[in-house]
Structures are given as C-alpha cells and as structure tokens.
Image (cartoon, rainbow, N blue to C red; front, top):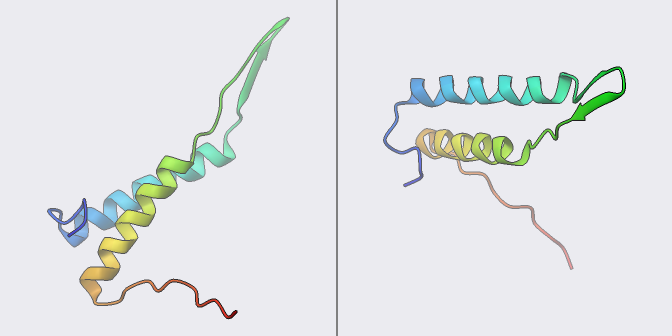
Amino acid sequence: MGIYSHQTIEQLQALRDRLTQSLHDRLTKPTAVGSGDRSARYEQQTAEIRKEIAAICAELDARAGTHAHRPIYLV
C-alpha cells in the first residue's frame, strides 16, 4: 500500500496531471529577474515533484497489475 492508496484512480490521474504541469512550468519559466542594478535568482527544485510523480505512477501501475521492474545487470 502506497502513500496514495486512499485516493481513487481519477484523483490520482488528476494529481499526476497537475504535478506534471507544475514540473513543466518550473522547467520552462525564467529563473532570474533583474531591474537596474538589482537581480534575483531562484532555484527550480524539481526533485520533489519528480519523486511525487513517480510515486503516483507506481500506485497506478500497482492498481493496473503491472509493476515496474528494475533493470537487469549482467556481470
């Protein structure tokens, strides 16, 4: 049972869409603002959003009966 096990599939899909849009906005919008001799920069901090999207996708996959497999390493 994941962190999102109490939500319906429709709620999970809507949340995934909102988080994906938020991630897209952070990656495409400007990260610096300046006026005259003053300027400000802010960091994009996308790791948490990516982690949440992965958790939602894992929950949706588990409900659909498909599980993400780890890569197979040949030694």
